Length: 487
Ligand SMILES: *[C@@H]1O[C@H](CO)[C@@H](O)[C@H](O)[C@H]1NC(C)=O
Ligand SMILES: *[C@@H]1O[C@H](CO)[C@@H](O)[C@H](O)[C@H]1NC(C)=O
Ligand SMILES: *[C@@H]1O[C@H](CO)[C@@H](O)[C@H](O)[C@H]1NC(C)=O
Ligand SMILES: *[C@@H]1O[C@H](CO)[C@@H](O)[C@H](O)[C@H]1NC(C)=O
Image (cartoon, rainbow, N blue to C red):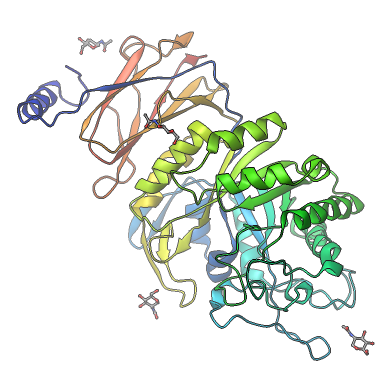
């Protein structure tokens, strides 16, 4: 019998379960010290809409970008400590240019219109009156609060070129959604826009973007278009290749030759594979990192995309993930599959605050109401508070486990989930040259999807020889930290 909390109680529980024929067999997963799936760059979030809505709220910045506890809605919330922020370069403005104004989708959601810094085509000089650097103050404020709390890694991304660069002047997308909307004579202007913001941010905001992404789900045609609810733009792969080349040149021209180009933020793993295979060697040589979105959930060939990325010597991020499952079960399932098959070096949630189950905190970015912290928040905290930048990601040995190693602290982090009947999960560290110290405490944290605990911590689990184990109720996500480990 396993002793975790109370040997007698657990013995009784397991016998009862066996009697009624519902006991699952114990599962053992073996953690591999020889794997190296990359040095972790961090967990993050995209700013955009929620930061435009709530960008002055320092309590929210504390919750998302620090690891201290913050009182929110009368509840003490452990900060999730995100270290990556993606800043959205907007595409909208209300000015008229010689009688021409932005065309707004009839279904546009106002909170999803993000202000463009470049107001008209008269001048590309950022000090001219064609540019306004005072717009979008809230999103910028959240960016700077993120940095002040320890965020280290920033990406500049675009959902659509600024409206006046678009064929129909509608930054939600082209008339049919499936054809390009960026005017061919503005291919370079889109690159100028993004490179100018990157240069301005380095000089004026104290933010050095590690990467710039010019597209958002560019080959998709089903969610963007003239009646879209948000900014969006289709780009054929050949147009992507041209814009990537222009962006490289414009960044280099501004002294930003070490700023990476990320591409192409396709909607699914499989679309990322097909786009990458069609971009051509000139464009792929200019891409510093492959970004993919995780909207294929449990489907798609994560492993194929990883093979392409590693074969090309490119880093790989899951740069956008989201869904409406507020319990956290979908997030945990898909994040664990990403670790095991996609091997990203960063993982970025979409909107920290949103409705319909999408937010880590429930809220409405239009009427500015805020609700409860979602169970999904605590599920993500099980990973983000423990798997920290600089750690080496290891094979946890199963689709339900990930492990990460901190070489300077000689600490092994293990996160695992159990969706089946309540059972023990055993973690076998026998392949490590030093698998911790037998009898030593293994602190653990637990969040139970659907109900129950929210990042509760316990000091009741110990190394036993080269193993430890823990009882997992259905829906439990647990994090363990093993000390004195060497690979
Ligand atoms: C507006 O039109 C005038 C006259 O054609 C032109 O001189 C000016 O450059 C235009 N301004 C912009 C911003 O296009
Ligand atoms: C804001 O919208 C939400 C739905 O998204 C609704 O439940 C709430 O009552 C609204 N609050 C206000 C203050 O209008
Ligand atoms: C683990 O996940 C992969 C990728 O989704 C899948 O092909 C495989 O069947 C899963 N293995 C198990 C045991 O569920
Ligand atoms: C390991 O587990 C066994 C079986 O539960 C127990 O008898 C033994 O005391 C444990 N050893 C340590 C070092 O905890």
